[in-house]
Image (cartoon, rainbow, N blue to C red):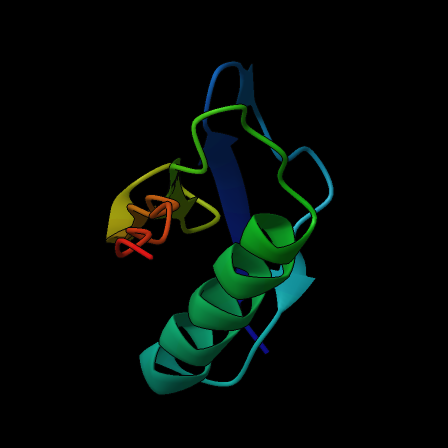
Length: 83
């Protein structure tokens, strides 16, 4: 089974040195989406926004997939009506 390496980028970059054995590019995409969602769920930013990217390399170092997850959130203060 081919091995793929998931490099992550948010405020820092982390190069994957271990990789995962996955059967095909559809599985690579599924794993990339799962990893981004998990990272976003644990991400804390003061303004509520999250942007995390992954670039997936094959064993030869070729980029086979890039994916970005962007979440923009804004808290709204309720408008108080008069008496």
